[in-house]
Length: 393
Image 1 (cartoon, rainbow, N blue to C red):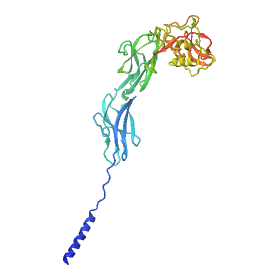
Image 2: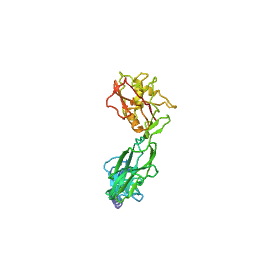
Image 3: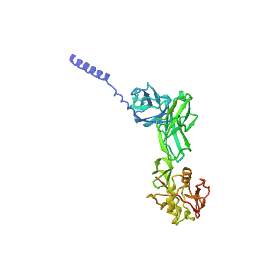
Image 4: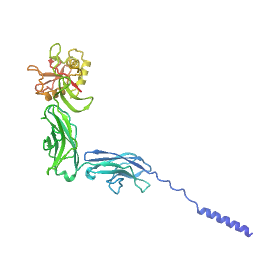
């Protein structure tokens, strides 16, 4: 009997012990957000920091960027947060006044994931900031024999110097290192961040110049752009034997330069040529610089007259060069302004040249190349006027 009671007592204790050790399943590990740092974009007055949330996970409470002169910066160094949520790219612009100028420092994107008390950082990227006052100079554009347009930009300007940087502009010289000592082309009495531009009209023909931008303060501390650009004014002989009259400064749409033929063209012994097709509306021609070739091709397509000015130009060939067209109205203006005094267009009797710019069905634009003047109205396509072919390359 005693043995049986002992067995029941043991069984009862065993069951009570098991109920005391029951446990709940563990909480799942949080799904942590991840982030990468992308290459920055340098903008006027600052830098655009770029990052990307590559995995959203359980979400995050904030995101942003931190920076330091040391590798692998953390938010205890310097940081800025950005708005927005979700996966994908994000950015924030930081003014150079917030950064160590003329320095090499490091940035990392960061994110604070939900469910974790640890900040997650992206990869380290190195950034180079500009000088306290830094300018750039762009390639020269819209170059004629005496005219050119200069462009520059102030990238950074330390606020401590903002009130003392009093002037900005361009200096130009035929020497490779232009300074204020040998030329001041143009200056403006302010030093606002951003782009600035100036056109000059007193250059010498067929001459190579060097240009850089500058800024200086009342103590005559001069800051120059690190780059120097060079260009050559037009008014030199091209491959056809005619003059190169215009250089837009860079290649686009397959061309950069405009060259005129050595002489006006003739048809059946006469230099007075009709525009042609006075009852045909060509339409969609332009007066802009750079459109003469397209105008000419369209005229030839819709006008079958053998002696029309556009077709005569298209058929023209000299010194092995045969890619000619009838200039637009804007191109004739540049031809005259660039080569005035170097080329005699026409004679004492005739100075008016046809353009490829149609005015309406019965009329087209012409330019008096002696006065560099073109009426705002059209002239009858049946009248004979001078024609000077042009080419681009």
